[in-house]
Image (tube, rainbow, N blue to C red; front, side, top):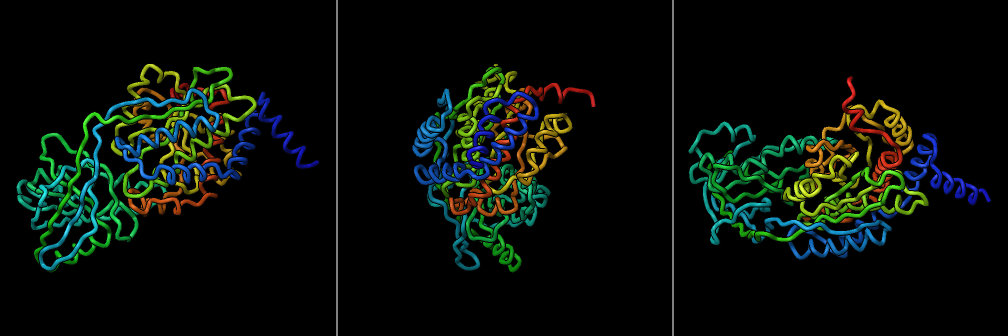
Length: 461
């Protein structure tokens, strides 16, 4: 009888959230329900097992889109559909590197996304090793003529992942900077925090006015080995990369909604990216994010009474190569004024510890209500305003859409990020459900209340 009474009370709270206290009670109840739910993990398991890796622009990604549409529909979301756009698909080929002087040594490397190919027979040249990226930038023009540039700077391990952002130019801009100084190829220590012999891929950005040279990432032990070898004398490497590109390859963003009961034209948008790199099965990057936002959508769609505002779940199709966010923002530019809040889950499967809100929201009633809801979950509202909400909502943010950021423990995220080791066994179902519970609290409160994030941000401080 006690259990039946608790269930009845929860149902009444969910069905009739009239006052602010009721809204908070419902948010807390939903968050606790999600914390005990296996749907986030089950969703990732389904995606990584039934589809596997999902490189944008490939047949595998097309299968992922079909999976997503079917799954969102089965989860009770409405208006489920795929929105197409075209990209230049990059397909990995052969990737090998071998020290030829002073003694033969096979290196563990992986091509950077977007890298051009070497000649079929490869490139063999002496290397110039730089212990820091700043050292490369300080190198004189033409000082690397005919050589392979190697940068071995380490990424710093921190909980919020800021070390990755600080090191990102090494991968993104490094190839062009090396080419400007005459290099014929570029290698860098993986942007990672592990010591495994598994290199980490990721996209590069060739810069205008610089030759496009082949580029790859080294595993951590191999970068260490090259440091020791170059300290003793000359080192030559033979590099073979054979990626290809396909112009105008179709890809898709997949969308599902929970229509708002009173203000359906006001949208709370949450997303994750459906694509992944092709080395592992994309479990933590970003199957975990897909599991989070899809589970939140499922839970809220099942409520007897939907929130006032519309909840939109977007699974972005080509985040890794920087295509899907701009494509979505362009396609929905005329709708940006109606998106009241946007956020993306794209930082793995560990527990969430904080939420950052748009300026002015943390100290308002909304922020205080969210803080109370988060406390039993082991999280809090960070008083600092969110700087960004994720790569795929950055375009919307530029159009004036307020963004939020759910902060997750990232101490070991970059141990497996973008590697063959990004697989389902790295996910703790309980931690993933806890992260989803924090998302649930944020999303339900944002969709049920009438809080104006834009107005709060614009208010004088």
